[in-house]
Image 1: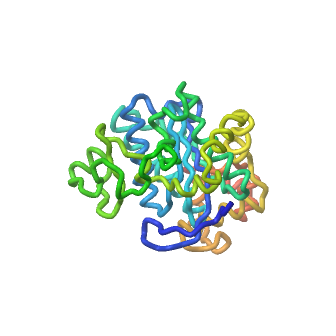
Image 2: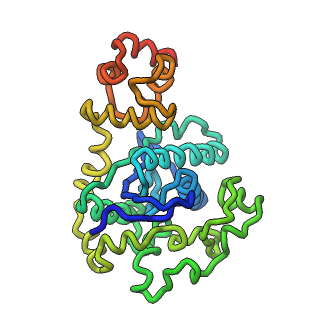
Image 3: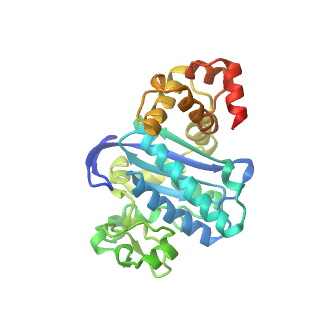
Amino acid sequence: MRRIVTRKLPDGSIRHVQPFHISMEGLEKTILCRDDQDYDAMVKILCVCARRKNVLIIVYAVVSNHSHVAVLAARHSEAFAFGQEAKRIYSMWFSRRYGESRTLRKMDVKALSLDTDWYVRNALAYILRNALDNGCNVNEYPWSGYQAMFGHANGNPTSVYRIPGRRVSALTKLERRELMHTGDRLDSVDWRLDAQKRLIPSSFCDHEYLEQVFEHDQAFFLKTIGGQNAAEMRQTIIDNPRRMLPDSEFFKAVNETSLRWFKTELNQLSLNQKVRLLPFIRRTLHTSIPQLARTFGMTRDYVTQALGKK
């Protein structure tokens, strides 16, 4: 299996990329998608945010209180930034539609590097088996990327230039806002809309990556889904990343955020910059006051005081 591949990214650069699993969960049983309009918005927002954050979607599944996306990204920080952007934009959609501005503050976003063949294969299969959570067969669920996969095996064309449907690139500015929920210019995308104005998965998912992971064998892919222990997989790729990281891994994650925010290593930040960063790290990583104090080089009392001011 070629876990790391070369791809042309949305910004036009050609880079070595690797797979990451992004999970977005509504904590305390928060419902993220209440009807088909919400599901449709979530899928389109995922696409727009992937383009903004320069990652490629391999496959996805959106269910009522969580969503999973596998992406190809050059770095962990870019994969995580994609998840955070999707949360931000979907929260805006949810707030406008329902007038509930605080509900999705409890949406948890995690990005896990799929750094072994086992992780890659099982994570991709697990994402699509989430259709079962909404009581649907995997191959019939409308809010996942399953239909983009193994198109040639079903006698369907997989080249984006042969995919039927309306080109998103041809939408007017007003139509982009109404149908794609964005003011971004989408002139260069190959995405297509079907007759119901939903995005066609094969027009934006990197089906080639998933297919090579499963040796271009749809039966192997379905067998992997059927043989999974759902509880074990959730523990492995969803819950475990929410456990507190060892100091070395935690420092690395915080340092990546510091570089993304301030273009500076964590140990070179000013005190004011560290205080600005603390609440974000507390929200997004499972940590403790002592671990924050060790990592940021502050006393526990100062960390507690700084967090209390926010």
